[in-house]
Image (cartoon, rainbow, N blue to C red; front, side, top):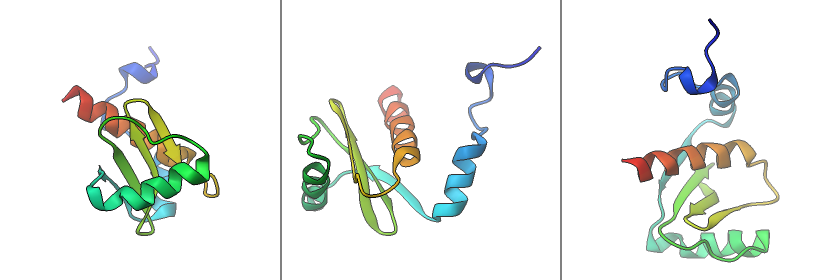
Length: 99
């Protein structure tokens, strides 16, 4: 019997995610701090999006914040490929909320 995505063990990463991690190098996912306000405001301005409400979780690559997620939505640098990072960020935010 073939397993569906929901039935696969949680510790198995999809191949695309594993490839992304190898290609990008260090990816840091962490709660936003007050010192991140300038970087997050910059992302919001670049993306023409409002500041996400609630506590934020950010993703950094190359030492720079490239996306943030809050209760009301996500903002990301529109000039960088971030779809994979947003997916990873959303997964982590969901895990934190569930814990």
